[in-house]
Length: 149
Image 1 (spheres, one colour):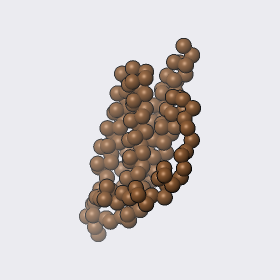
Image 2: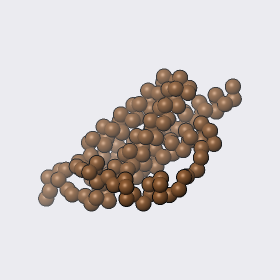
Image 3: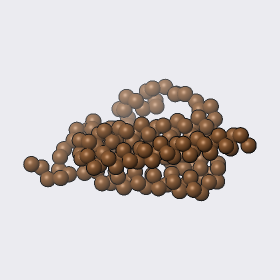
Image 4: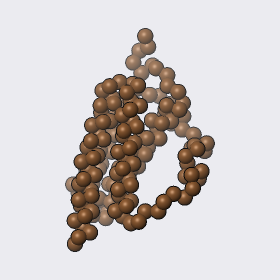
């Protein structure tokens, strides 16, 4: 039996985890920037920060070595240069919704892949995902109330 943290995972497995950790952190940062600089909302800014820090702590608790060394942006078949220009955001509400959804999706992937490590690690990502669902409601209600003014 291998000691905890000594299991070896494929490069592909590590790339999935790395990409989704980055995607979730980046999406939370976009939400944080809207709350901070556009809405000047201290409470929502801090919530986004706390979620981002919690994600970082959960990632650091994963018994995985070599995430960064497995990154291969140049040959990534889904990189922006290979998939085309993408869709433009139709304004701030669209940008905000796209980013909160990418966080939710990334946390779901992390939750599922973490099940290969331990149920408690998967549970931590699941709990974060549900906190982001709650954040999404707050962000979208804030967006609606500001648009109505």
